[in-house]
Amino acid sequence: MRWMIALLFAVFVTSPCLCQNPGGEAADRPGMLATKQGPLAIDAPKGWSRVPGMGMAFFVPNGADFDTAPAWIYISSVPIGPKLDYRDVNSYIEHDVSVFKDKYPAAMVQRESPVMLPQAKLRAQIYTFQSGDKNNAYEQVVYVGEKGRVLMFNLSAKTAGVFQQSLPVFRGFVTSYRGGADTAPVTRKP
Image (tube, rainbow, N blue to C red; front, side, top):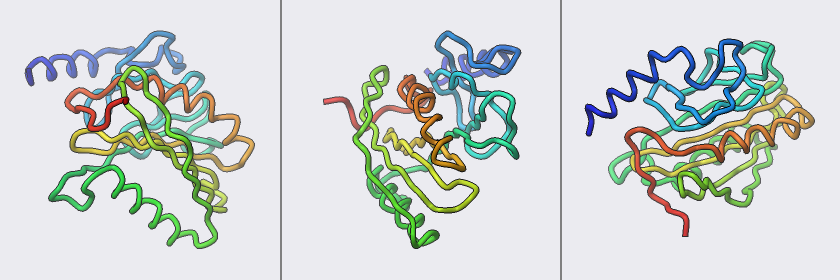
C-alpha cells in the first residue's frame, strides 16, 4: 500500500499541471495538490494562484504576490495524539484560540456553524478571528480532525470587505477537500 501512495505522489509531484493551468489559475477539474506533507485531494481555489509562502500550500488572488496580496489562503497542520502536546482537534483549537487572545487582547473570536466536507464525509469546525492588526485583521480557520493531525484551512485578509469577498472562494476550496494520502478521518459525518 505504501508503494502505491509513493507512486501516486511521484506522479502528482512530477505533473506540470497539479491543480493549476500554466497561466496560474485553478483548473476546472478536481485535482491533487502536492504539499510539503504529501498530496491532498482538493481543488485549487478558483481565481487564485499558488505562490511560495507559509504552511503546506499558499494561495493569493490571481495577479497578486505574497507581499501585495490583500488576502491569502493557506493550508497548515499540527500533529495530534495521546502522547503529544495536543490530544485531539478540540485541544488544539483551545490552544489556538488562547494564543490568539494572548497576542491580541482586544481580539474577537467567534465559533461558527460547522461545515460539512461532503466528499471526505467529515464535519469541520470553523472559527473566525478578528485581531485589529493591519496585516491580517480578519481570519477564518477551518479545523479538520484527521488521524494523527489537525489539518487547517486558513483565510486571512487585511480588510473586512476583502474578507467577505473572499469567503465564497474559500468555502468552495474547503468543501472540495476529499482527503489526504496517508490519513484517515477521526470524525465521520453522522
